[in-house]
Image 1 (cartoon, rainbow, N blue to C red):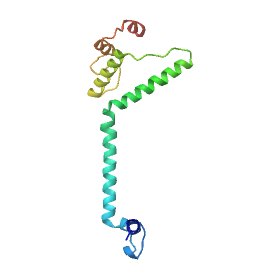
Image 2 (cartoon, rainbow, N blue to C red):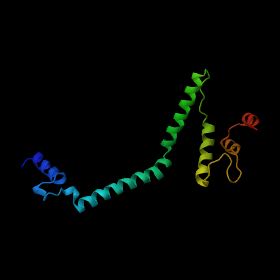
Image 3 (cartoon, rainbow, N blue to C red):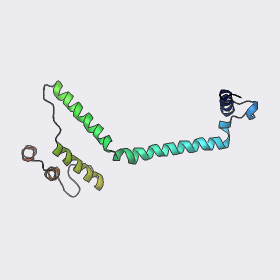
Length: 137
């Protein structure tokens, strides 16, 4: 029997009710159903684990969002006759330190539960924020 014919017979036995499988496809038998359910459960668990623990920890995920934000902001600025904004490594470092603090301590706010303001993070990164502080206060 050729390989293609054997594969065709196996497919028929698994999916088509006929005399060769006692009119009950193998896929509907308890062991096959249990196997399919187990595979689905493992796949779903892997997806949930990845979505909850792996993706949020990925630096690449954050980079994609940041780049999209920068691109969209600059596209809007250019369409309004304004120059592009440039990424500041110091402000990026300050923002990352602030985000790490939020993630570690479980909050999402400009001022931490301990009263630490954004100015602290600018200072830690070495960013001169005197002008921004005067404007915003």
